[in-house]
Length: 432
Ligand SMILES: Nc1nc2c(ncn2[C@@H]2O[C@H](COP(=O)(O)OP(=O)(O)OP(=O)(O)O)[C@@H](O)[C@H]2O)c(=O)[nH]1
Ligand SMILES: [Mg+2]
Image 1 (cartoon, protein in one colour):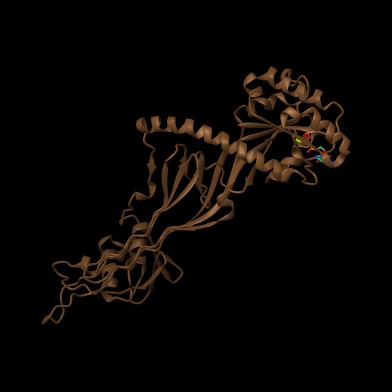
Image 2: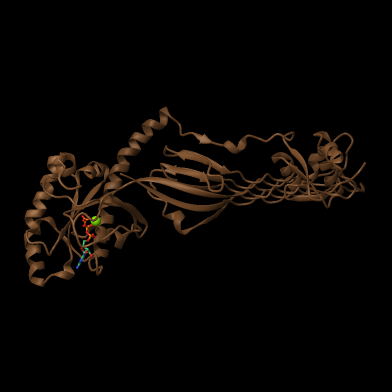
């Protein structure tokens, strides 16, 4: 049984550190060679699929995630420190979308699989990097590239850990609405629930998925009522919570008939661990409670009222303990399988952002009284240019000339001091 858990978050990669502008100090030499080191790169945002995580609940409460920035370069050719990547762990089966464009960025299907969704900003180059045969003493350094921000939508197809089973009208939907984010229809007649509802339950640090299925009746395995459709869906759950309604007359009979139905449908289903819960304790008298306790003594039933909440916490803690034990067992099994599969099949690492854009891919246009140059690489260069340093500005113009953008700007009518926007940076046009 699948259920879509969905959440939106905002991530920001670390910015690159600024490059340093510095000249060596030597005795008796007025001005030594340039020795400004480059800034460190910013950390990237990386997602990693992990079998130990089951839901996206963590990302429902915390919404902003930022990786560390790089530090700036220093004199004596000292490079800045790179920012650490931020690794965000998500359950196996998580899909990551670019929220605004709706584009699928990653589909993490294997434990350990990683995906870099936003790369950290590049560290700016220090002036020592700009020495050429004609430029012995570059008096400029690059700025660090700002870390990119992205809004993401995370989506997970969940498999339920727990199924609530029971006769119609015993309070399954009431219970799931009390303990989870699910808001199913609740009403005082049988077969209110027509399709399963799933909800995420959080108990302390543990979260798990509960399924509320339509009520089962005698003959369900032959198709009576609504239940059969859904019995197959609960075959992958870890544990069944069997709910009884204390106000019903024949509790023992109902309990046995329901288990009989499970068995007739599927022996494996009948063998699943069950937690017996007697509901609606608020609607009965103490004598009836004592009677039920006596009837089910061997089954260690829990008593609760899904309406008043009495006994619900105790139920949740007991359920949590059982789930943790079952998970630990499964993990031991899957880790053995995982080790085996890892040898044959190393998890893939996607790095789509590493396609380095081409400087020659750009467009030039006149918009209002502004001239606009667009292109991934040229915008990156512009944002990293410290336009207050003459040398830096000259270098940007050199590149614009080299790629032909300067000529096009001039052809469109750009003249001395006209505004030219390149990404977020605005510079003034200079005529030769
Ligand atoms: N007094 C009392 N009423 C309850 C309790 N839990 C549920 N009810 C009532 O029982 C009725 C049936 O509840 P549901 O949650 O719709 O029952 P269900 O098991 O989901 O029923 P189906 O979907 O038809 O299988 C509703 O009128 C609830 O308000 C309880 O603890 N105490
Ligand atoms: Mg229901």
